[in-house]
Amino acid sequence: MYYRGWNHDNKTQKQLHKAMVCYAESSDGMHWKRPNLGLVEFEGSKDNNIILKGPGSHNFTPFKDSNPNCTANKRYKAVARGEDEGHKQLFAFQSADGIHWQFMQSEPVITEGAFDSQNLAFWDSVRKEYRCYFRDFHDGVRDIKTATSKDFINWTKPVWLEYPGAPKEHLYTNQIQPYYRAPHIFIGMPTRYIPQRGSLTEGILMTSRDGRIFHRWSEAIVRPGRNRDKWHNRSNYIWLGMVETESSLPGAGRELSIYSNERYYDGLGAKTRRYTYRIDGFVSVRAPLSGGEFVTKPLIFAGGELVINFSTSAAGSIRVEIQDAKGNPIKGFGITDSAEIYGDEIEYCVTWHDKSDLSSLTGKAVRLRFVLRDADLYSLRFR
Image 1: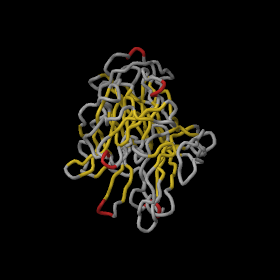
Image 2 (image 1 turned 45 degrees about the horizontal axis):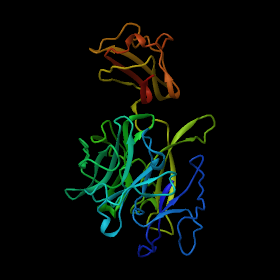
Image 3 (image 1 turned 90 degrees about the horizontal axis):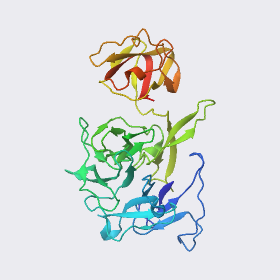
Image 4 (image 1 turned 180 degrees about the vertical axis):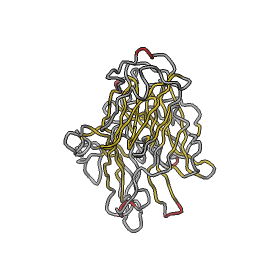
């Protein structure tokens, strides 16, 4: 975990010292320790977990580079803005271990942006390029730009993200990342900023298949609720990154943890809280007990089985029909051939008359028809 270490006066919100980058570790995503690294002096001592101060420390956002051609001394990378006159510039950083950092070069790598919010980058394993996302002002509204690079030094001219059908809203942090179970899909959890309501902030969800055009849901991921620490300016930011953690429910397996902050400016220090999703459980297609159904667009797939992530009530169910491209049921894969599926599974193999083999349909255009009763379908894939 990398986080910003700074303090403010509780009444005036005056910053008491410049921001520094702090480091923490966990083996389970729930219990954290702050190691004594002995790297950076603070208040006369190096007995602390600070890894960086000075340029870049206001919004330092590292990642582990999965580029197979990455050299060992650059295994970890980051982008961050400069200080003072350099705050309108993004600089590139490198590290061999994620703790000891240095500039990749003295000159900035991106100069078209505001950069005062969190700026992030990562290796896109599908398109074989680095992607960077950062904030700028778009017709007076805070918005998100993106650029790409093959070497992390030379970047394309930044372009605005697009959100067809979404309202014009202030977006602060973007938290865009490839979903680790389907890296061709980008998941973002940007922060919506509401200046007309005392600068309240909250996280929302968006997804993309090209990294530039996003479908954005308007509903908050986590409502502030009855926790007064969350009804404040700069609270409810969703942190970058998600990790698999063990569920606290016996036998429930693993789930996804995300992290969020609260009490940002109000109190002696900010708090971090953990929230959980079911794996793949960001959105679902849902039907009531009275029933509902949907049909996919034509798909051409590779793999021999259809696997779904779903949840039903005790009385609910899901059935699956495979159709040809024109919408006609394929013999042996009709809705009455499908097993009646019920329960709660992350990876369930669909069968028709107890058979799951779809190899005869591989490479052909098909449609999937789902008939649901009091059920949620979270994801589907062919394996």
